[in-house]
Length: 83
Length: 490
Figure (tube, each protein chain N blue to C red):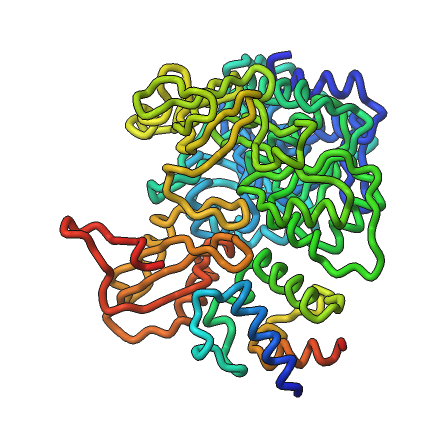
């Protein structure tokens, strides 16, 4: 998978949702649930629109399962399938 | 009209053929809604509900929610609406604290309601979904003997979040609710031609205030459950919605949602933003996307609607929550306790015929914020020379997650129940989007995984209360007097 997509997903997360987190703490395979991602539906929706803005793609919320939100890797895989 | 029943009767008599509620493919007019209310009232009486009893409504925004509320009022009982995102422990608190003897719910939430019922000696009645115990029979005619209801009788219990560890019960009388609808509708000028989309929960004071106002004027109430951005955009378009009450984060999400083609919403004439401050980027982006500016409304569980910004110069005054609605007085008091000068910042106090008289069982807390006929909101603000109110800060200690108020003490108490957690401090931190998030700092005596804490939280509290950020520390920073220094935990 493209390093570029993973790096951009990480930037979106750090900029919008995990501003308090040190970038080094967040690996591409880190379980995002430990950082609170996917717990709150509104926050999840904010993440999705931020990803839509970044990648200029439509995201179908129904496709966003807990598995998609597991890690930067899994989100990137989903994005790669849309581009 | 001075009671909820008279308000509803007025709507039925004057707007009987108008659409009252639209829920997905289903819709009912005011006359049918009245028949449903007569039917459910009869059922409630048959199940022993009588004047003064409390009945919990654990339902999403729906035709059945509306029928339940007016039916409970019709028999003189008190409605206790409960947010459907709450977990067992939370629902148990509301049912127990309100003294509800019955829970009206749907088949999806029945298992939760059943567990609560066991602990609270209440009964559960399914009125929506699969295998309901009560069903509206269209060909049956039900009437009940009139029950004498006074304007001063209690109509609804709503709960206010504070920093006391537990939500505070706010009772509103029939008179309060009618006054709320009068004040709001006289100010905003809605009509029976309007359709209002409710994705904010009607169980919450903000949604409820708009809902009761909509019924008073015979407007169409369009309900939907959880916020779903694509569905909201679809309904706004297809149902030609005229009025849309929302919270800022919803508006932000809608404005940023990727759309292959721009959506025009020409029917939309009032977009209301409340629950949290409306940021400039959301205000402008929403206008850019849909051609209409959101307008801020200010209210509280204690008072109902306080003000709304209907000003013509919205581009320059959008940060204001507007002028006080009809019959509501707003005063800002300075540090000396005197009425502040124009633009002088101080405590925002409110006097309204729709406000409660205090918190149930909390004498001290009531005396602290209800003084000389005014409610002290805990918000700091100023009023400009045109009467526009600006909120600039708050004295109350809570976290505002997308319009949902979270009491840090309540979350700390729940976290301290987890085995091995010896100290907990909960605070709000702002994310990159400018929204508040819950952060928990924990001291533990054994090694605990974040995922275990999160799993426990998911089970014990509504999603919006779950700390998105969890940090473990060997100790909490404290002042010499032992007070946790939350600022040092940000």
